[in-house]
Amino acid sequence: MDLETVLSRPVQLDCCEGILRGALLTRRAELRKSWRRFISPECLASLGALAKEVETLLSGEDAFRDWRFAGAFGWMDCDASFADNLRAIALAHNFEHRPSDAAPAQLCLGAFNRLPRDERTEFLYDRYRCPLNIGLPSETDVAEELLRQLMVPDRGKLEAGTEFDAEMVLLKLNLVGVRAMVTRDLRYLDALNYFYELPRRSLMRMRSNPRLHSFWMCIYSQLLSTPGWQKCALR
Image 1 (cartoon, rainbow, N blue to C red):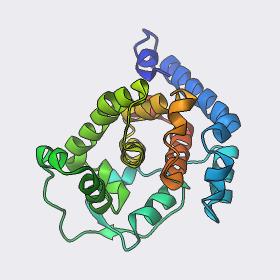
Image 2: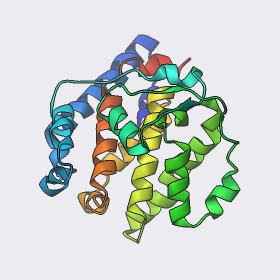
Image 3: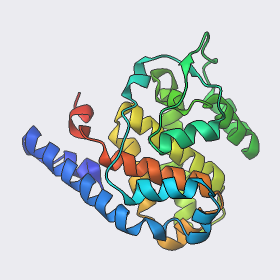
């Protein structure tokens, strides 16, 4: 679903907003009926107690939590783990966070990209222990790089059927999704649209981490239910 195409139509703002909102809700209705082809019964069962919450969010009424405040809040600390914080965001729960005494140093993208694969993954888990921090203005360069990687090298590997790091791709999808929640930037939502639209054989290769796989689907569902995208995009 190419949202940029929708935005480019020469119609008045209220019409554009209606078109975009309708497209998102249509996709949400589609996801409500078809999410089980993305999350297999085995994948769902492996979630344990979380399975019912994931099923309820994806199958139920439209739900979202407004995280836009985080964009102006400053760097946040959380006592819980990255996994627990991401779970709370994905399932539209609240979670404890507080202002940090000091933000981490600015990330050098060149140094980050030169890290071995496992170290890059752990670095992102650690830096974004509170995932809402990916939505801060200070993290724009990082978020843009993650978006670029998803839509260029990662996309190319999935389309070609070559080997790829499923955990890293899912981690980036979750962080990009959280960035979209905080900033309401349509480009980040479009990245999730693209991965949702992948052929089924490609999606099956992404099920090796059931939690990250389920969480990005829940975040995507919330983004599709979020009102006001058109107004945010044209601010």
